[in-house]
Length: 238
Image (cartoon, rainbow, N blue to C red; front, top):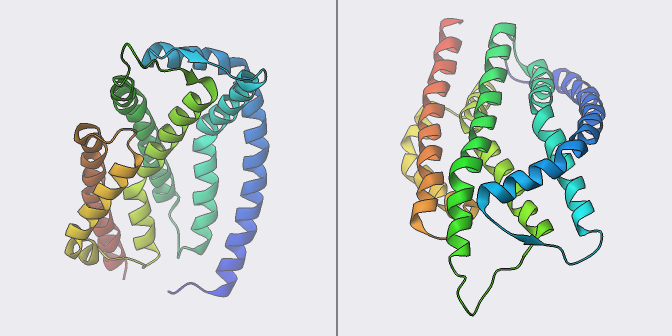
């Protein structure tokens, strides 16, 4: 059954209420995150081996606030995702709660998988490569604010990128894509994946690019399998 205006209205109302709840939770978790922000900053410095400096009196304070918001978002992600999926189920035909919970858990797992993959694999190699340009004539003096912005941006980017399979399945559920289309244009998908990996990885070398491109291509193939499962379930329900 195609989407209708009434369902879209219900979805928008549910989404508005979800955003209110999400905002309240983000404020609370960000406040709590402030008490751990300095420890996280020190942990990133130790993990990457970077020595930091600050160039203005409030720079470190605002960096800790930025980390606090990141921690609030990172901790709240399961709730945020569940509320959005719950609102999105309003436009589905006969949504299954079992399917909704399974979809939510898989999406949460992939987000944290991507984030921790970035933290423990991509970031250390990338930062080590960038610091290799130091020599006896050039010393890296890195701003605490720019360092944390760099790290947090890539952690979130990897977390979001790893959501590719659930995204494809959701689009299939809305009848916007088909597995045959994804399979037929696989070569173009590989090109797009290579471009995304080149843009998102912190260094221009091929090794770090492959650290992003290979998992992303695997996720694309998993997404195709997921879309086929959605199509199979739709066909058997007819």
